[in-house]
Length: 158
Image (cartoon, rainbow, N blue to C red):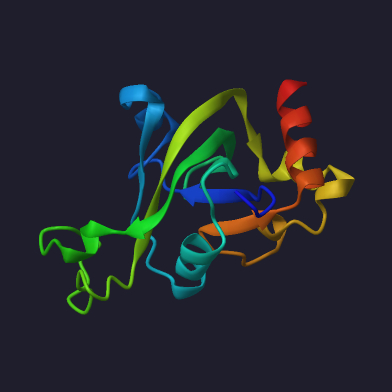
């Protein structure tokens, strides 16, 4: 790998995919698929690499928050859920030759002892400019600086 390691937040709705699902998967590893936003797709396809670290964030739940750390174990490849008419992620314009949508595989590295809420994250000065904390930020994949990543991991250990 020539590029430096990147750090990310992956947002997921726990009713669809949760840290519990990941923890029960064989080898604590599974596909992370279903991204249907072009900006998030471009990040996933072009910027997310094998070895990158991911903060897993449970959204659309009360409370929402970061629940653990994952590692990308397989870089982007075609999201085959786009080809399946029975899938909620089906896209009739996607083909094997022109997949349109991509997924990665992630492995659980660490489950935090507690959920880190947005309110708690907002109290950490180094996180103030974090994309996740911006009002109206809805992107399911967001870059995180190493400094922000380390601050979150330190907070989780308190």
